[in-house]
Length: 443
Image 1 (cartoon, rainbow, N blue to C red):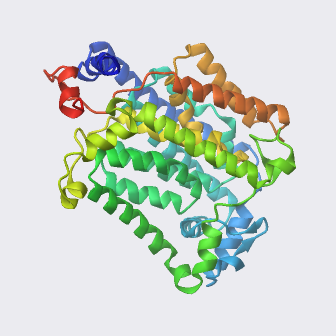
Image 2 (cartoon, one colour):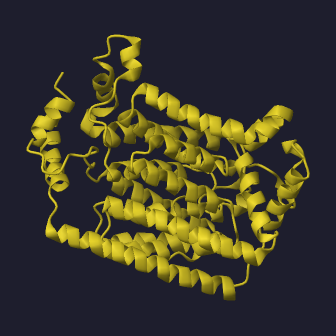
Image 3 (cartoon, one colour):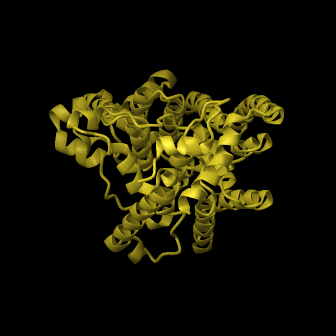
């Protein structure tokens, strides 16, 4: 019965994937034109913000102090500090901000112009993801330009999150074009700037196993690891323990005052190890549930996928070299798994600071349109999230409301139908039943 349900749902996916209606083609062109308009309009808005809105001093001076220490030859991470504390980012951060200092002379106004350009590049990459997936109606792309907080994060506060997320979106663009190896290199570059990008890692690993041979996965991960080693080499050769313990510290405890999402939790509980462990368990459990019931639904769940993936391997060589069938993942499936996996991490994060909004803001319209909610409710939820992030300082009520809306979005995604994950050639004469029998035969 479950198999029949899968076939029925898949037949709809086949019809959608293999039919290019005139109306759909028109919507695609509208989305392209509107995306181009949004880039130009937002570029003008960014220019006005840089020209007329005062810069907010937060981390820029600290970044420049840390870069100065690096450029002066310091390689001990415990001695590289700024006025907001010690350096806690991997080496890629130092290279990027050294380049920023070279281009701007360390002055704020030229840096704002540079970050304005970065904002437009990031917006363009994100719009490309949305246009390729065709999940949103063309007019809803405008939501990507409506965040006061995100504009501020980029051009008024100059956070390193901006570079990390731009590289992450670039990696996703490469991956939907099936440039997996280069995508992993760029992904690793994003991690080297800020480790929050690792929230996407479980989803990315799952997609790689679905799309590549084990040997391919190994070499892609090896390439990503080589990037980290090469970037960290000056520090690994001289002070390896100091570098690894500071740059890749997963146990940092953030200040309760700055928490946007758990301000309603008493500070004693907020800083406790028990809360950290509970949220980690919740994070991993939720990822496993989504992987089994949503992302691998059409493959028969996690165990069905592993069985079909490796059952024909007669030797170790066949095991590592066998290519999954089918292996061409759709852009919608790739973006869905990546965005939802990251969002689960955000929901389970012990503390979200204001700049962390950039970690998932650009996925919000996509996530909302993956639910079955009515469009007015989607827009209301989007606006409520934005309002919560613009309450300063955050309160118990704003953080509780933010958590509630996050959970509404997550449950909305859970109860929505799972998209068919693979590309079916246009004009194919096979029915979905035939495809299902070939790809996932009955046991």
